[in-house]
Image (cartoon, rainbow, N blue to C red; front, side):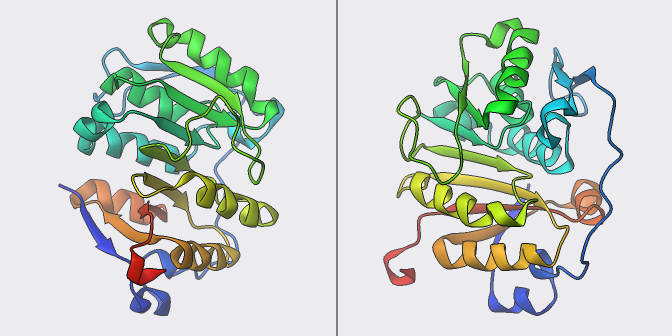
Amino acid sequence: MSIATPVTEEDEKGTSIFDLDLDLAPLPTYKAASTTSVDFDGLLDPPLLLHEDLAQGCGGQLWPAGMMLASYLLRERGDEIRAAESIIELGAGGGLVGLAIALGLEPSCPIHLTDQLPMLSLMKRNITLNLSLTASVIPSIYDWGSPIPSRLPTQPDILLAADCVYFEPAFPLLLQTLRDLIGPKTTCYFCFKKRRRADLGFVKEMKKAFSVEEVIEPGAVGERWRRESVFLCVLTFPAAEEM
């Protein structure tokens, strides 16, 4: 069982997600365009088919935080996902997280994959690669910082974001989008890989805006993600005393 622990001031002194001691962590090797099969160590049967293509941007590749978040949701949050009435994924890239939970958990509501225009064709391609998902997953264009598109639910029950912390100039826009979407009934699963010192500034601003709890994965799974400097937080609307 994973454990959620509140982020405290001590975290800022050198532990947990606030221990951002590297200016830049090495990025993974870029891949040639290809279609891959992902089963998350047997959690998906049949596996998810996903095309990776960096032609339109770095979101076209699988990244560690997306793998961690999808795996965690499949193992630990099935009942919550199935009961949700609205689900949005931000910065979906090729759609890994949303497609994985759509395939493995079969929620009762549609899953909205969102990203910028260059990623739209890749999201659509990956939906069609998994024919059973064509009616349950909806791709949309959503530029961070802009008004919520009319086809998206406002203040969804579940908000997903994986590897959205990578481009410092976009941090204020991402934070504004989180503010727009996270309401009193929203649970946001926010997973990222720490790479730069600037990430600390974003996490501090996120902590000011929301209630933040870090999810600690036990055993070998948790150790693997800690080695890769990948962290998962749960964001919720701040309680009255926190505002």
